[in-house]
Amino acid sequence: MPRAPAAGTDQLRFQQRLEEAAVLTHWLAHDFGNVLTGVLGFAELSLEQLPPDSEPYQFVSEIRQSARKGAEFLRKLLLFSRRNRAQSGSASLAAVAAAEAEKLRPLWGPAVDLRLSIPADLLPLAMDAEPLRQLLAELLDNARNALAGGGMIAISARRLDLAGAECQQLLGCPSPGPCAEITLADTGCGLSPEVRRGLLSQPFFSTKPRHHGMGLPMVYGILYTHRGGMCIEPCPEGGTQVRVVVPLTAVPFEPTA
Image (cartoon, rainbow, N blue to C red; front, top):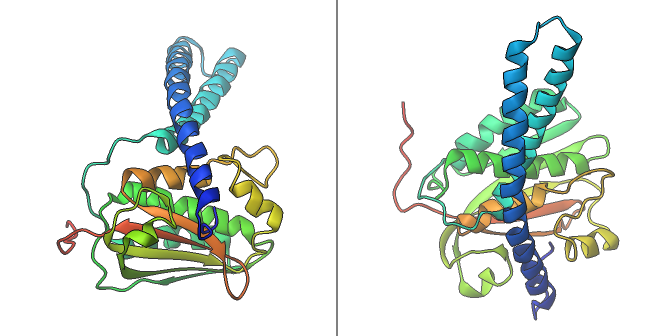
């Protein structure tokens, strides 16, 4: 999903593919959810009737675990396919990013240098904390996968008064006005020409075998419902950066006790 060329033809076509995929995904996810509800419900009922140390109990436990994994995948499908406007909320980007970094640093180890540069006086984003966390988590996961061994991932942000012409350069549903521009950059291998073509032609494109490619569609879906936008482009010094814009709230953020 690189920045569109001047005419924006490739980006417009790709966004149309994403929206067509979202409609189909929404209906499939609804039916998939009905099936999962039955599988998970009867698995739970069966486990209540079986001795915990029996072999059938272990088999049904595996069924329940698989159904729960299916439910998590269904959640991702719904995040991509929902198009109803989200209810107004607010979240501190600095607080959510710091919490996600605190969780990931011990898991990634010293090989990955995760840096945050977010202004303390940045107004809260017009988005609840949980979708913001999910958005950052997916982008960070993609960035980590781009680092073959180790490297640096940096999250920075600034206030931006988004103009109408700039909205045309972004995937999603951005509106002109005050927003936060969040940039997540990595020092990985960058986007090859083949990967760039895949990103502009396949909504669920992935470079990893047996991977469902739901990360960026999830980010796109979250941004679409929150009047945000995104683009992916090469870093000047190498690697890849994702630029995300999210509207700002009109009032200062007051964290709850």
